Image: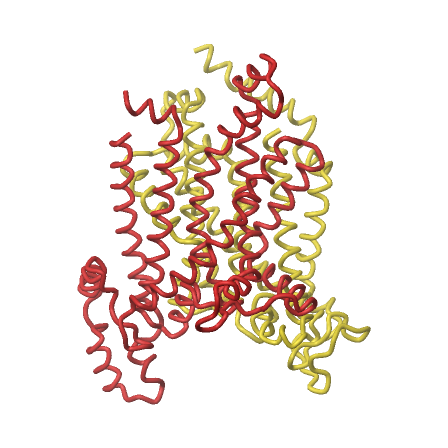
Length: 292
Length: 317
């Protein structure tokens, strides 16, 4: 009885000790986090206000100025039908970020719920879930996404649902292992003895304790989502032209690379690279802060 | 240990069956029907229906699955709708091409990744470690076509040092084939380097902090001897698993690299099949990728058990 009573007090004590140095303060002291967050913020601003920032209309074709190399008038040059590459790169942040964000949110919410159930309920549920996870894992993410998107037709909602569903078992697996660790803790035994029902224990008692794991999974998966969406667009199964999109623009222009027109492909490629690297710097910092 | 391997084999079979169901149903919900895709938009509905009937795609799904899976078990993957010929020769040729590219990337990246990870671990927390870790992580997450394009721009267009197309043409000498494969291999190497070096780093750090390493150091062994005899042997064990799992990725994740460099491998095969709605070809290609991946994982698991004395002896008791 004393044990059960002592439990909440220790937790409060730990929380207040941590409260002196909130996690976000620790994050802000890491240069890698600052750099990553700054780049990410830049692209988020572009995604929201891209149309206002872009110096030119990303759709406007200047047929007298096609294939122009980077210059003062066109910082990143123009593409094969005379569109301003710089403007397209700025505006192109929107499609990839929006799709990646919603796909990752869907996968994280569904995966966390499934992982909680697999880890806490166990039994048949866990065994069947585990097999499905294995089967999904037996194929590279891009292949699964590409087969399903090809099947259902490429549209942003389809891509969101397909990537979200592929992420679900992957996130569920990680959450499941975190839940298995939590199951050993005394506070769950107390909750059970107090007669709390299963869903209350899963969502109110266990969930807050596995949230750090969920947060890390979210940022890691966001990086993978960007990777996959860019790949899908490149293969022609993602965002469709003429919408400005990095992957689709690369796909439309890489054919003229050997002819020396490198700018219309290289700049969107660098945009993708900077975005995924930024997300990784942020992820890496969050992981390290949680670990310490 | 035998029971473990048998159990592992059994599980792999169940997963394989699930995979075949997923592949079949995913390929079967492809938009439009194959008859329409082959005959084009101008064909009459009756001609499309007749061709669909001839291809057997108008029968119930369960029946189609049964026909397909029994065929697959007999080594018959069906007829390609784009070539009107059996699928197997195409899949086999594509798989061999992919294996060549994968092998080249692998031979380069495995030693590089292991050395990178070990060097990072030996310099734990110092700038060398941070650089290798962050660079590895970044290289891993940059999509292959992005690094592929950078590579093409730098080596193919600016320096004109290497060919930008992966296929050397029919009857090319092995040396020429090799030369054409160097650029496509680089994006794959970049992606794999991060995974392998990260695992090697983690394994080495764990081994460095272990009791047996401390004992070895305290009994006066030289640092090189401790590292070679005690640290590396233990740290490379988990790395083997990662290397084998990445073999599967390498073969499947080739899709983008093969399309970018126009190389006739298994990735390009499923890409073309999806574009032309060639259902038997797509299913066979994706299933092949799945099988290759699972065999690689299985080998890794068994190798891990055989190499790890704790598991080996524990299982023998």
